[in-house]
Length: 206
Image (tube, rainbow, N blue to C red; front, side):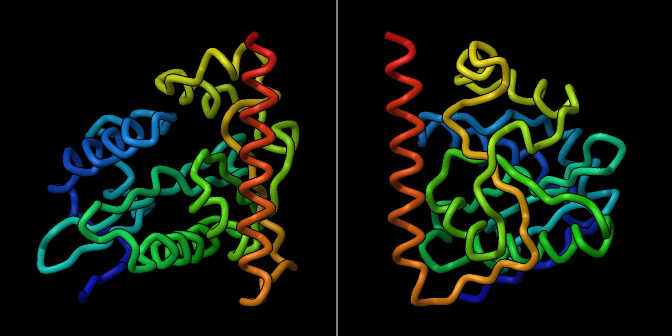
């Protein structure tokens, strides 16, 4: 399957609504949250060259965009999504690599971070050099955390004073490199981390 992963340009603005729909459907399928985005927001990211898109024969295959926080001290690669037709071919990792490169080109010397509930994304991030961290090591920018209000788990975040949620926070450690033979062990550790977080939060709700 021939899929082109590239920096998004003005010609890709036409996919804005489709990207939003794909992000929303992916969140519903997982039963956890990706902060909802409007087409105008996605168009802005594309127009300002802060996004990566994957296409195949003119069809949307995947997408991810850049967000900056706290006076550009922090940068997040957000909204990673892959169309169902193009899953299980390693496309998500290719998009993450491309958007990471774009982030480093546009915003050097910033702290790259992310939050996610997806075990697959956790594994990809780890392989790229991210490490799990507490939320206290992430941006304190209210604008970032306000973006979580559209997530169905927002009440958990607020109840824990933004210190914990179903999402796992990850921060880039550029000195870290993951060897192939470590990947299986990493997946198991991340699965345990995800299960531990969910169990702890559910116990608190009882």
